[in-house]
Length: 596
Image (cartoon, rainbow, N blue to C red):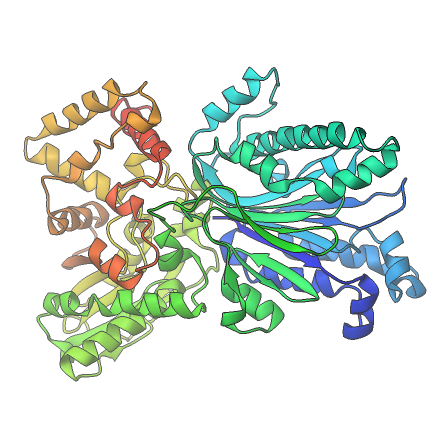
């Protein structure tokens, strides 16, 4: 779920010096694009800069990557330090700065990392860079993606005689694109050589004519997964494209001064102070190309899928809630739960207090309160019962840190509940592992001694791993899966677990498009309510003496609230690509064989 940001300045740096008082206009806007997407990754950040038309013998492409949650500030401190060491007459002159300051360039590519693998550290941070003596063959690359078929891409490269040094999707995508870029340049060279004999002229023509869509399409057709990719070629062309299912998001804005691309729409609105209607979404399967001369074109990498599956978890949890559409969707998710919530408290609003858990659930909370008021005519009693002490999202922390953080992230506001009189309803945006609930929230709410605790989730039960962005890799991590397994065992239905394993094992070596998701059969015997009751039994320890209930959103409710974002595979098991079925099949086999 990484954050991407790219800026192409369409005027010379002197233009911004004269109009905005600084040639650093692009750097300042890039800082905002990155900082406003800090929610998308806290493990590290990177920035690449490409300069146009620098003399031969001078560097034209720079990159800085820093590990850690303060990476954006650290990168910009480096930029500030380098700038401050230059003479005042240099820093105030755009042309001199461009020749002496490594970050004075017209193309900027930023990235915020949230890893979904065990790869950590500076070497795993984007932008990745593939250098070459020919500028047109140099490629800076950053993305928000996960591929499900890394092994196939690896085999494709090795079958050509290549020797990839890594098996990560990031590295293989870069090498695959680089390989096809080299071939495209060579094809152009062979064609143009027939008309020109001067190699400098030939290079110029290649840079003008390079078919970006073609070389990307020849790599991308092998990819199975969700992705939004940005890239810059060393001579000055840049591009951004999305997968044909539209799983990962990307937006752009363009005028006669700047082109800005980011993972989220309001980020661009805020950074450039523009209206929502001025920011456009890059369509699934579409590529936007900005040539060195500033010409903007659109093309198709792969035709838009007939059944697009934009990630609904973006809408529920990860994306910033100040997007107009996301704000309204989250309110509706909360509003739709109001009737079920009223039933759990027997419509006793006089003795019920309502609150929310993390900040991302606040909008759904507003919707729930509004829905209850509309249904009853009564304004519910609300309090800020829970306080988040540490501004760190445990969900996107590394596994080794998550459990320790979960027990200390929250505290309570004492005196907000009348002991043994008030019901307490708290809404969360999602319940995935249940770690924070079990180790922190339920225990500390228990201290307030409400009559009953009702935990509400604005999303459905998370039942399946996500292989397209969010870190949900192992079956046993899901409290819903653990609950279903326990129910099967408790009811003497172990044979269902065994049969799912046998079916999964039998198709282990099938082509991915022949594999079915038999894990659905684990949940089939039970209602959502039965699984919810079992989840509570798992999440509540002996020291919790009060009744606790769970209320989940339904999948139909999710689609009703987010009609344009049908990607629901983590809830339904309906994976948008064949690779998802292959990996969930593999995950269940590993679970059953105790090999996670």
